[in-house]
Image 1 (cartoon, rainbow, N blue to C red):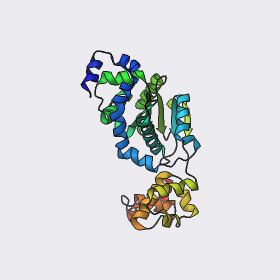
Image 2: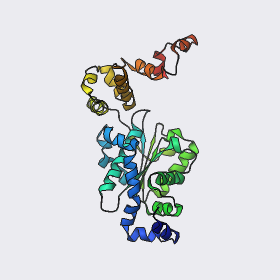
Image 3: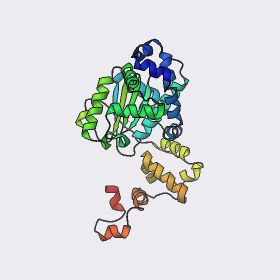
Image 4: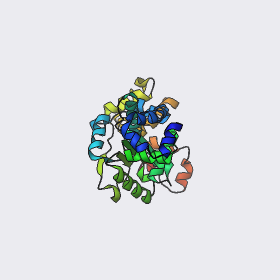
Length: 288
């Protein structure tokens, strides 16, 4: 971190400087913005994510966030909640990089599957340190008080109930100055009082669009698609499995049973499965 910024922070002058000199904030977050944009997880989604519906256009979704301050994005596994939050993070940092004015919302993506055991404040500090080399706790606290963040907590269903409560309390405390989006498969009682947004499956046109982004020569693959294939691929995670199988073998699964058989066959022995009386393999897999 810049010694000048650290020294001023130690004198407690950062809040005043952030008010009087917005360019200081931009300067400090320049490294953060650059690091996020160069990270493979974010850049991949910026290039490949397909917006499933109008509500998920970045400008529309950000307007909803500014209005409601906290949104809960919910939906089944594989439908693209994490992909959308990664995409939104990349879009926001792209906008910050080009902006000459004080940034509106600085996105902080928080993968709860990797950050379990930390408080929300510690999670955010860890991300600002990882991508922006912000190591001074007093400076981070000053930034949080100043606001202007978009906290993206991904995977509430993967963390403990106590952590969920702390996250809800944290975003409620900071919602006057920052916004937040929480993703989950399950809407618990702690989340029901917040604004809920249902994730959307892909339509046929969107399926073709995503295939085009994931496969170098998409037409031979699309020529193999049936109505069953389109039904499978409405879930983006399943579509990615289909495209990976195509790249590896030049074939695609005929139906959902075949899809999950391909996915789980490396870890499940078909003969042993049936000998143990667990049902017909792989048809049982779609009911798991």
